[in-house]
Amino acid sequence: MHCQDSNLNLKPYDLLLFIQKTIPDFNKIADTDDGIYNALGDFAIYLRDSLDEKSISESDLKNAFQVMNMMGSAEDLEVQNLLVVGILEILTDKDNVVEIVKKHLEGNASQLFEMVLEGWKFN
Image 1: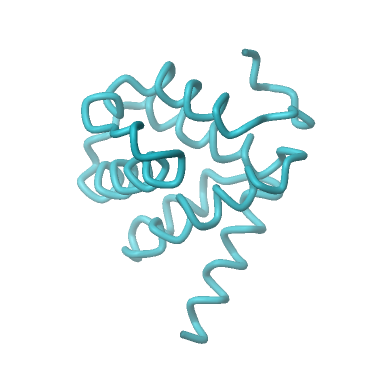
Image 2: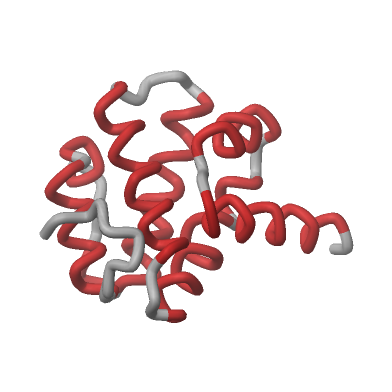
C-alpha cells in the first residue's frame, strides 16, 4: 500500500496493517484482537509515552506522523473519526507531547488536532 496520496481511500483495516508494518515497536505492545478503536488507543498511548520519554526512533516518529496525516486527509470520515477519538484525544494528555504533535501534524490532521484541543478547553 502506498500512502503518499493525500486523497487515499484509506480504510480502517488497511490503516492498522500499515501501522503494524511501519512501526515495529508498536507490535510489541499491540492488541489487535479487541478491534480497531482499542488498537489505535494502544498506538496513541505508545506514541504519547514514547514522545514524552523521548524514546521513539526517528523512523517510528516519521511513520507515526505519516499515518496520522494520512488519516486526516482520508476521504473516509470513519478514518478521520478514528484519528480524533482513537489517537488525537490521548495525545492531549501531556503539554510537552501536544507541542511535539503540533510541529509534526499537517493539513486536516493538524486542524482536527486543534479542534480537539479547543474542545478540551471547555471540559
